[in-house]
Length: 159
Image (cartoon, rainbow, N blue to C red; front, side, top):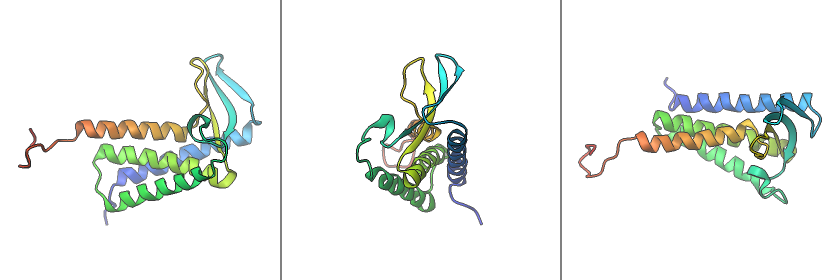
């Protein structure tokens, strides 16, 4: 038996595990707001929580974000079961699923997301691997649209 979109499922599983393991390491080894400079002034591990979406948007009353994460995750899993993806699409959707599940699990368990990647050189908001995976997934899907052949005249040949 062959699994449809195997890379999609593998990327999603590995990404989800990486996200959840790193968050648990931070929660178990840091106090809230504690920061460890790995490269002082440039990159720190800083434990914060975020009840909102990316960059703390919608942080007040963002109960609906947990349901959005669940809907996106279920929708992507349904696509993975019923649709054939190209390789780049499998990678892209797999990363997005990993990110949606990772942050969704946090929202259902604690009502907030654990963030810890702190790039201070550019004063960027603190984020986590789920956020990284969502962005990598979007980039992969953009690549998929650029490398996929286009059928423009309807005769089945690429022009």
